[in-house]
Image 1 (tube, one colour):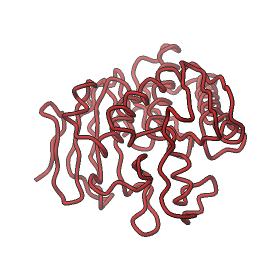
Image 2: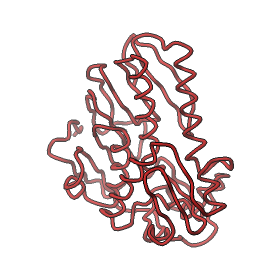
Image 3: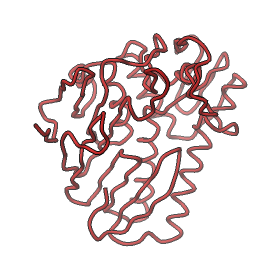
Length: 290
């Protein structure tokens, strides 16, 4: 969501469109640094690239050192794995591949749904070190885009850019830009909005079952305990202090009521269900249209 009369830096990264809006054009050296950060992140965490560290872990079990962002990422996933009873897990990659959301984007199921392996049976995630006792395909998509938003935000702040909006395919982080009006997309009609929110200083992330859907009712939000797509919630929005947290909780809302998640995490939220009803936190900053 561009801020009026500001400058946009647009690019593609980790499979989505990015737009960084700033008051003045970013210098070429900073643009190059941001693109290098995106490429490194993809090279470490992508399950779609055969040369990534995640792909190597899936081929050859063992001990792997990941970048420093692995520590907070692993800690957050561990919390959400516990709160959701194993439904939300970074070990969901194999389940997604089974249903056709694979590196080749075949979108053809290779068999019945496959539950994710139990975390404690195959993986030890200690800080930045991941140790697998068997081949395991990680998928950090539930939090990864938000994490990369935070990493690019840190690059901008370190370069002295204090006011910006980062839009990563609809996941947003605003810093110092003043209120930015954002429409909440209708889960069944992208051309319509069900509400709006004024974003100011926090991250807004969304998840929707229709965003990556294929076949007969298949989509990318899977329950790790069954390998089945979730059928209750259809779209969620979250606001939090970091994009990684907002991104992860937008997925967690498909498995656990927002009020339950608020017992552990500081955020506000909106969930739209498949029957057309909605639930939201008392402090949700958005306005829903009637």
